Length: 67
Image: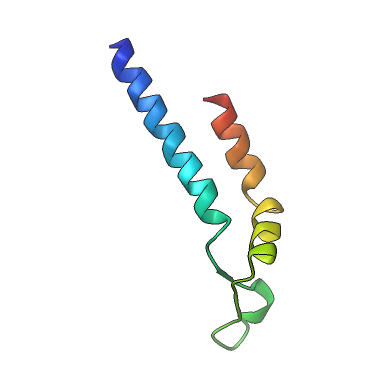
């Protein structure tokens, strides 16, 4: 039973790590540009990282840290 829990926790940690790495690379639509049109796709890595760090990164960091 303990081995199964260790494997599941390790898989969960890996998935969260993959999530964090992908969030630093995935483009997003600028929030202010969605009014009345398709929006502006932001694909500059510096702006993507800035957006993620100012948003959900802290929550995900503490979730992974608790595991």
